[in-house]
Amino acid sequence: MKLLDKMRQQKLLSMTLLLFTLSIGIVIGTLVNTGVHAQRTGVAAPDATPLVLPKAVQTELKECMLVLPASIPALGMGMAMLKPIVPQLRQAREQMRSLSPAEQDEVAAALAAEIAPLPKEQRAEFIEHLGSGFFPPRVSDGVKQRLAVK
Image 1 (tube, one colour):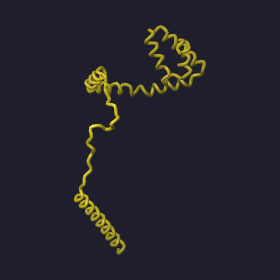
Image 2: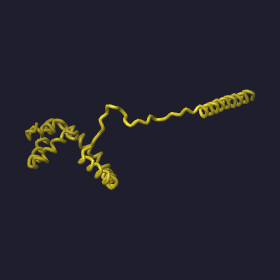
Image 3: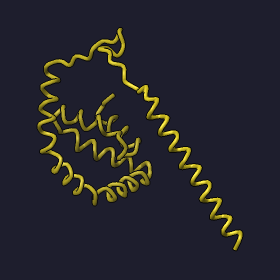
């Protein structure tokens, strides 16, 4: 019982000392208020070049800022529609990577045959993103080789 009373007294004493020290610190801090203020200069660095955006970029930025609030719900709906598809895409990518080299060459030949009739701009855009990770490198290289793209 004495031990419990002693622990209570120790806690009370330490808590009192802590509060007293904190109070003294607050009083001293209030009395010695020199203050901390930000430096008010016009230029951050004297040799800095101001950033000037061309008028076309400013106009486009303003248009984007006007369109952005209206497009947020559509973006959310689009992401909601993609969410169930992502596991299927991952599974298809893994299946594509597990194909034998001969089967990957067949996929590259079939893909090149499908891409060849596209207009030049669409074909170039497709080929630009072909090696982004879905198709194995052997397939994307094979398509590029068959379409003579460097």
